[in-house]
Length: 283
Image (tube, rainbow, N blue to C red; front, side, top):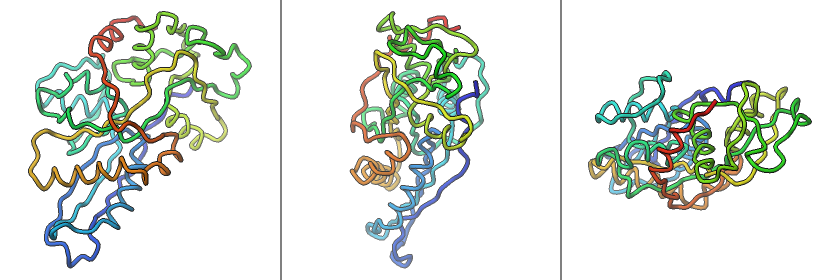
């Protein structure tokens, strides 16, 4: 099968400048986001910053860059001396952001929750949610489709140390042994609904059907993660953008990309579940 998703290209920069003469100072917020949500955040940042009024002469600009979560997590871990096992998978060298929006809270759990106090874990909000299931190519819809539980399915084994959807499945099988599927190199892809939609848009000749075997897996919850130590103006700017993302106005753009409004508070991840899931053999 075709590998799930190449990174989405593009950067968006929006500025809450209103009338330029009203801006005595500009605060820039750098956001690194999982590739499937980055375009949604970028488009919304443009519209939000175009209409947001300056506060006491201070304007906010938001730059959103698509970055795979494994690379950002590896960057944070290396800088702050935290051991993060990615199984030797290659990662990109990234510039660490002011705000990080990975696809799942499991990434924070793997960084010890707050990365030794570096991340403001107590202030995390989910800005979106996307269900995790199976992608069934049209060519395989008649070949033993997963009609019941995950235990009935045959999936392509991907390393849960770098693939959040595979980790969601691994955690699910820890909690329910009947949820562990069979594995085959030609099996079905475990993806989020958002990733499925992107694939179908980019590959009209190789469309997938999205199915959700039981039991339901932990969905992607897209936590909005900030640093615990930021100057006052940057903190106000990151909080203002977060407030915009958890508002009802963000619901429409999300639904167009296979996501829905979440939370606002993400479901906690038990570190012991993640640890047990990563110890399983997946092949």
